Amino acid sequence: MADLNRVNPESLARPSGFSHAVVGRGTSVFLAGQTGMDDSGAIVTGGVVAQFEQALANLLTALAAADGTPDRLASLTVYIVDMDDYRAHAREIGAVWKRLVGGDYPAMAGIGVARLWDADALVELQGFAVL
Image 1 (cartoon, rainbow, N blue to C red):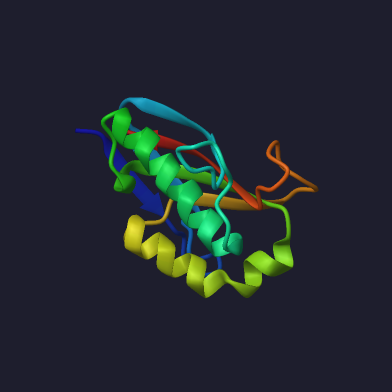
Image 2: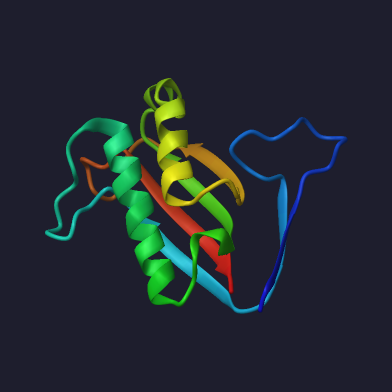
């Protein structure tokens, strides 16, 4: 079984919703960027929270197909079209994370972008896991 250790030094500010570093030993799984696209190829409606949930579900589906589980996520980058909207819904997005992934957080970054490949997409998640 792979070893995955989340590292949060006391000399850094206490992380909320992410880990400062993750050390992993095992099989690497690189997860392609996933948007809020449903299985018909359409971006879901309902705003940033609905799209985050669909994008995360898509990422976890790809991870499961590679024989991984959510707790094996080591790194996640969230590309965000409207940072103010994303931050305004942070609690709801956090609730989605806890429901789908649990209490373990990978090393994470939120990056503001002008737009994504799919013009209607508000967020895209790209990750790395260690199995």
